[in-house]
Image 1 (tube, each protein chain N blue to C red):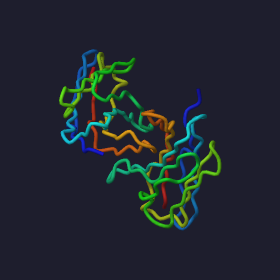
Image 2 (spheres, helix red, strand yellow):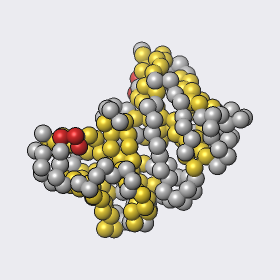
Image 3 (cartoon, rainbow over the protein chains, first blue to last red):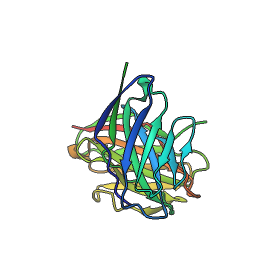
Image 4 (tube, helix red, strand yellow):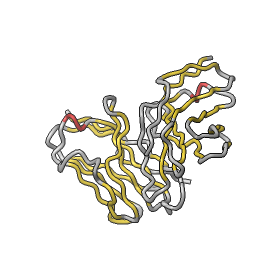
Length: 111
Length: 114
């Protein structure tokens, strides 16, 4: 699976949109971009995933560049409960669905 | 709906003792994963099963670790004998192996080996 690069940390203001970047310049055509987050003392939580089209669900939006070498996770109205470590993962569609977690971005939502 | 259920939530034991961690996946999921999380190494995949069969155990650190999945609704991760360096949070996750279904994680077992 391709490697991803994320900033180690970022702050955002409560009520504002949080834009989390991820670089995956070596992504191949059959690899999907997944986002998970981990709130303190909990297991990782699935947020969203996509291949090449932008995706939106009740939690977030995923914007993937046309060349697919980077993506942005958008939390439209950050709340204090969104404080967590966010992981961007690239994965091939294959049996087993293995996930390889990197260091992620530690997001602190401030009041 | 019930999520992935892990037990115990916390375990403290002395080195040399056998430790058994338990996981009940989400009903209908046929893939199960065991991960370990430490400050130094982050989240690491230890082993995963498809349809109760171990597929990849290359992440299992050594022979002291073993995992079983006797049926679709139960899995165990055993450490025997345990060592202080095994202290970590152990997560179980499950998913459907069809398409790109996401993994759903339990809340983990926090293991401390004294």
